[in-house]
Length: 232
Image 1: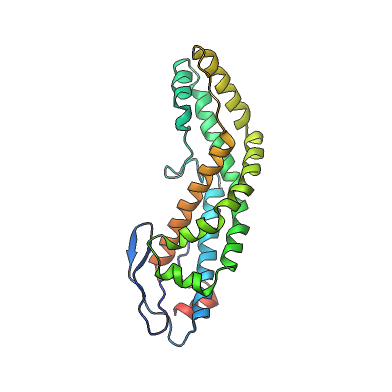
Image 2: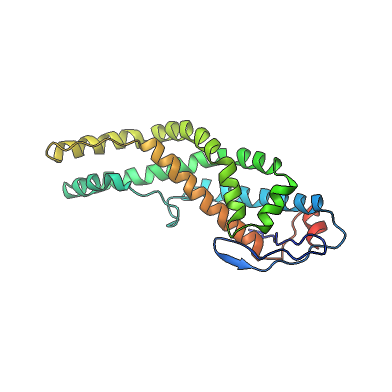
């Protein structure tokens, strides 16, 4: 995956150190003579590439399921269900349930692209400068603040539909009914659609943060004319 750097300095001014996910990287100079709007346009282009890379990664097969950092686990609220069903030889069904939750997230993820692109297109010069001068996770936090609620509303019905299609809903019904049968009267209820939606978004923003780190870390790749104009 090609990488690009967005460590920017406004003309003739050194900005504060910028980083993502705790990685501190000193700023560097952009090409002289560029106005703020051109520099911010370069930042937008870099963020477009980075967010699309993140979505592409999580939406592939095993994008969630085989990434230990973002894999959607059995909900803590269902830990008793997990233990009881494994005790009665139903561990395979529990494992299948976990896998299908992750498959649902992978299938819903592509819907994030248009929302991210829209958020980037609405970024003002002030927003861009705020990201450059901001805290360690300023860019990722910007996206989360701007898009999380919209993404949730878009993801929820998709996740619900996908979970139905890949079998999560029926599996969940099976394991809960099995638990209720074996638990000696203790019953459980849980909103699995909301859980998977929120975990899918958590994982997506982790990967956006990773892409931000790549973007800011490596000065080697200028993959578009605008990036070459801005960054050399």
